[in-house]
Length: 257
Image (cartoon, rainbow, N blue to C red; front, side):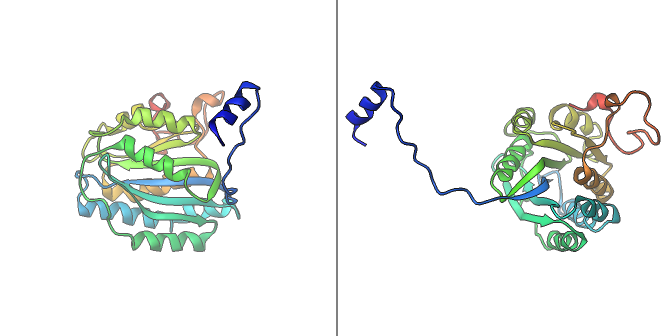
């Protein structure tokens, strides 16, 4: 459109035509879009990394997780695996898969077993890992009722964007960040994750004593991510019957943001 014509349209309060691309393809509805963000930084040696990936695969074979997927019904969940370390090192290691029954979960577990380590060494850029996960959620073919990023790692951020800033943007976009802090390097890492990493609607944090304990923790975490976040005490009048949140492996509410 010639410049003087555009000027006349603006002058007389008329609208310029809006250029539109091809309509977006329909997205598959799911109950949950979940990025599993696995730490591959220098603090994680090959044996520890393999234990994380093996634990993740085994989690998708556990009766609890398989039962959670059955409860999710036909819609099921969409899940992808991201490996990360430094500010410029995030790899979409295993592309989005639609899981809605035991067979699809076991196939996904086999795919995890066959996935190599794409990120080996480097700094710990938690904020950049969150950013990459958010971008991936908005760049897939699914539309989730809930959206979550499951960040696991064994150290504090020492490079890149502040994870608290990345968390704020993710939460504003409706994405919850849950954490799994591996405590073998830093016993107080859970407090750091609770204060600056975990957040959003129903967010929660679990801990693993070391990489060997990862399978137990990630299976529990996946169960609650698929079925919905655990109930926190301040939302319920009176005491909660049964085991306390601490007994179930969750950090105290005062540590959640």
